[in-house]
Image (cartoon, rainbow, N blue to C red; front, side, top):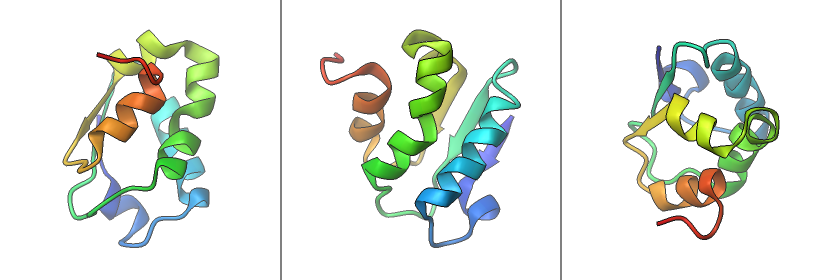
Length: 89
């Protein structure tokens, strides 16, 4: 399933939006989720942490990294650090 973040959340994202988006992801993890961040210059790492933190605790880093594909995210390194930890390669 592909989720165009801007279409779902609008142009201004908040921490509360991360919770909404996380539930959409959770409901589709079994089929995999592509998150398209087109139109955003930078997504705060606090948003990313709120988005995937609970999922990481519930399902584990490897599973989440395999099931969620992220594109058009200018600060992909921040996403990787949250999902894989600070020692990713």
